[in-house]
Image (cartoon, rainbow, N blue to C red; front, side, top):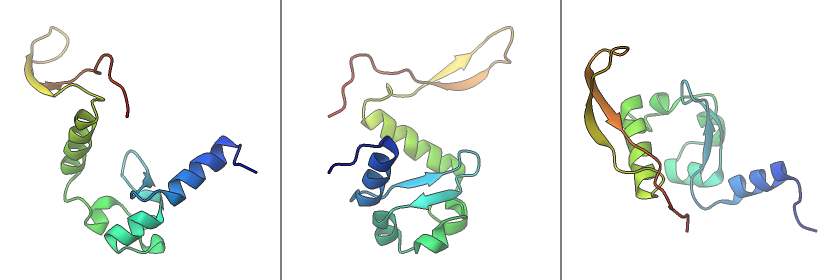
Length: 110
């Protein structure tokens, strides 16, 4: 009998993945759940990681470092085009540097 419930499918994939997977809050990047691969890769026990942030555990030094790594990974997977620096000049927003990226058209996941 196979897993039919989408929540069960997700939970099974999350737990059984050989890749480290985590669920964390967006604002603080506080771990809600981690899988066994995360435990093996980082050396942090599940109970030690859950409830703590990536910064508290020393996984990332700064939020900016984490964001940059996630952005590079998205570009590598062709989810985003390469990020290009631009100068923004607009009547509503003050002039200043921004990063621009857009979804790739026709990208496929392998």
